[in-house]
Length: 191
Image (tube, rainbow, N blue to C red; front, side):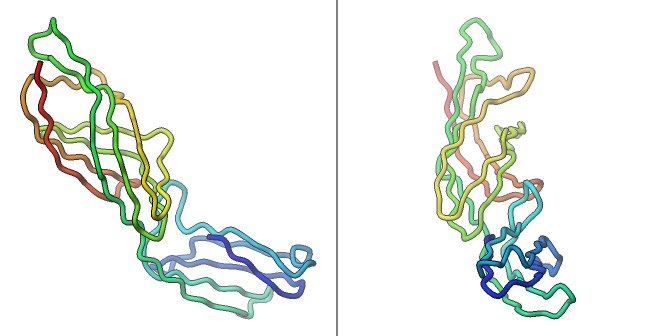
């Protein structure tokens, strides 16, 4: 979050607490920073690689000796991630009896309709009860009110083999270990 401070030159301490009341970020402004009367600083709303929580954050601006100059409550609904479409890239294997298809890549169309960004670091793909973890390198940042297309290869060994037929598929997207959203569909594999 960017915070713009206007005022006379002085030492200031900016503190941001998360919805649980825990200090998540701190920044200092020096007298030199405010010589022109304006300074903008960035305060993080979550730890690296995490999706910021929805809820009420508190911004506190203190003088260097501790007096509170300003306090403001900032309310956010949070990220609202949804999967709009799931597709797979397959490799067909004519010569193998028990492994007609291997999944090579997952393709996702993802939206974030919330007011905070979401950081997606993995998907868990369940195909008829078998679970495959797909890690996103680098992590995918979904900005508020945006739609993104994400393609990620299946980096597993041995390859994920499927016979001909119809399969129930569930895809869950995660930020750290927190489930952001899931999507259920079916795929049919035939010659």
